[in-house]
Figure 1 (tube, rainbow, N blue to C red):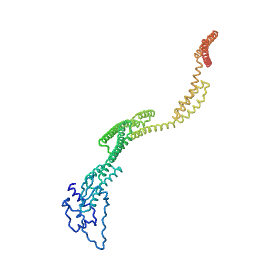
Figure 2: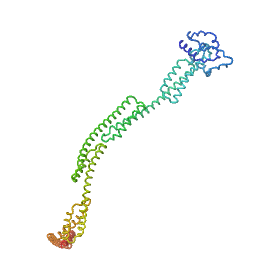
Figure 3: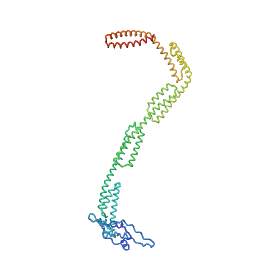
Figure 4: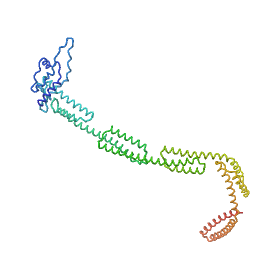
Length: 492
């Protein structure tokens, strides 16, 4: 320690030294001027006694004596003597590895007080070591721990306290190892947390890229847009509250995420722009169909207009759809024109049905008369009666639409029965058919007779093959004969 350092240490020690009223130094210096400073202390530095001296004011008899100030904890001077010693003039020395190092001076105090002062300074250093050990034990952040170790090590190296320096240094070495292990654990935990955070950010970016890569013609824009907004909010929350990943990593992920959002937004705007164009074209086409439908709504050419409405409906079904709102409104207008026309036609048909009600009564009576002709017994009489019924049927006129099919089917049933009877009668009386049947019958009978002779010859000869062949041919010809004979009976 240099002379100036020792003087500074002495000055500092005088301001920190505890003083009590029983201090003999104070009692001797209170009534006398301050003594000259020792040679090791600059002349300008006051002595500890000068700092400690305070004039005493006699207390009144009625006031109790002042209470003494608390005394610092006792120092184990026997233990302290192992690591330091003090001289009569207050100089204190540190004993370390067989050498003595001056640590400072505490003038105006006893040797024990001077030694205790510098032991307490060492205890203050040990308190820092103990506190750091507790922090390591509690696995506190190691951010400034190495700096603290270095600071304490510097304090021990200044040799301005008295204590077991080697033991303190050993504790510091152990602390350094423990801090190193704790720091490694912190780094491992940090890397693990960073990996989780990186995976989370990667998941956000990957999902955004997946959404942006979907086919614009099939994507569900409402759902995907909402999800993309959620991903953006998740990204902002991670940026604000999540662990930092490093500028390069975060910028790389952000560029990918921003690119995915840009592509998605470009596809969305292009899709809806095209959709707007498509909707406009569909709306224009359907407006034209509506104009035609509304023009036909007042037509009384029922058949032509109904056919045109069927054509317009086919075109409507083949037209592209507009937006849901527009398409619903357009359909309402188109359907309204149709309803107007068909309502007018139905009203006209109802009027006709009322007018044709009397005709229906006549035709239903004619149906009863026609039904009496069945079954057909006398074809000529039935034909004559049916012709009379037909003439009166035409004279009766139209019937209501709902009854038209029914009454027409009733008359058609009788007409079909008469026609069938007429065809059957012609078939029976056809001379050419009779001649053909008779000739075929004669030829078949001759063929059967020949086959019977062939069968008899084959049986006599014992030729099984010819027997089988003749038997098969004979059975077929006999079946034909039966059918021809039945046809011949029909002509009789």
